[in-house]
Image 1: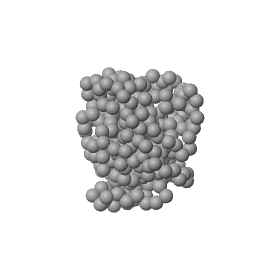
Image 2: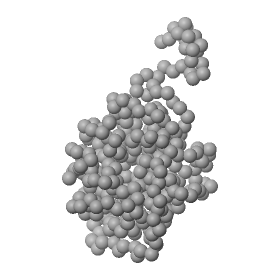
Image 3: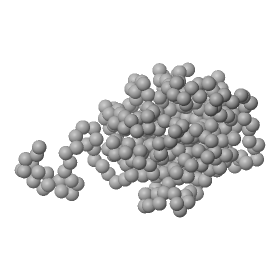
Image 4: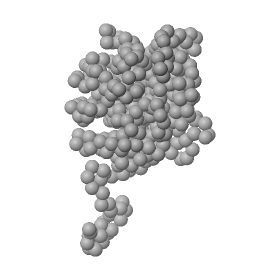
Length: 330
């Protein structure tokens, strides 16, 4: 309990910014609202205008920090015939897995560790992909999608609900991700995500996207201990609400600074666009691999992130049913 003299001193010295009694890891300065996005998807050359019914309000028009985008090659994607689904029996509630027919504006030869040796491919999207033809995207090899939903404690991707609905109607397995903002309280960010992302049967587990973004309005880089504690607060709250353990998406530099040896009982989604994840994240089991940020596909203009599930089709259906929580590393 505070004494009257302490309260008066706090009021006199800190009146411009307020006096808080918040303690522990979340007692950080809270700046203006964040407007972040994952660094893996570049901004398009032209503006993307969402429908008037999506993302209403002032935050929907705020600029988002992005990485520079490489020029897109002139590739007539729509001239490529959509792939046929692999023939296989339908077993119970299992659906169809479509073979990947994605192309790449900047392809990498992964050798014998090629992601194309794995069965179940998918994508992740945000507002910067614009209007998506989800039926075409699925036929081209997108069996699952992670959709940008929120970042910080007050920003929602203005295309989230349209993408969420479109992906579901086209039959993709869908999930939502949150870009974690290091200048906001973890519990507030969790509450914001829960407020905006529906709790739907069959949805993929939620994702926390943790990375350093040098173009972010938040210049804070907390210590490893603070990072891990804030992540745990956020993930515990999402797990209680959605009933599934969140997936951690990260990048090589952030992983090296903070996550090596941590959260061993959580599934990981790893970005590695030049080498197999086993080379970049040694001794780390992973569930999803983001192997390209320059993918090309029918159903979407410009470039799109490409991902693959670590396992075969049986592993995929087992994981969806909750019987297989984390994939093997190799």
